[in-house]
Image (cartoon, helix red, strand yellow):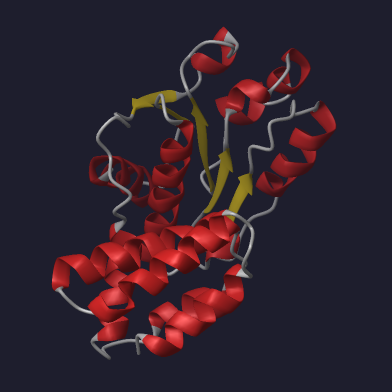
Length: 229
């Protein structure tokens, strides 16, 4: 993903528009995780809060014209930072009418807007959409859930170098998947660095509890932020 960030930064530094991206991979859950990580990493490099990452989450339902127009309406406002990011998960949920409503913004997104989309393949997407996006294939067969964004925050936090991890969780509006990704990467970090070994079983239990909706995700994260400090 580093080469994608480099291309985007090159466009931004020239004040040019960035053509929308379509990220494709067989495992859409992993694709979405990778795209969200990419988006957050890009925002972090420009010191932009995560509230300027707008995500239309895949709820399995068709995206209607009214919904997509309300979501993309934010593209008309100029953010107080260099750019803002819009991410449409599983773009094949668009029907013909809602797809057509995106053509203008996909053709001319504006220098302040970066648009990411995801899908399992190019099928069920209008040709007029395909012709306006940069297609990025993601091999999800062997991808681990390792995320440098979280690993970096965990390292600096546990080494008492920075409280950026605290700021991330307390200042941003996060989703359940963000808490899951953090715990998964906390396990990866612990195993790689042979630290927090005594906590591994408990972390895994909490992770599974969140996935099964048996535990309050925010409460669990607050607990671990205190324990690993």
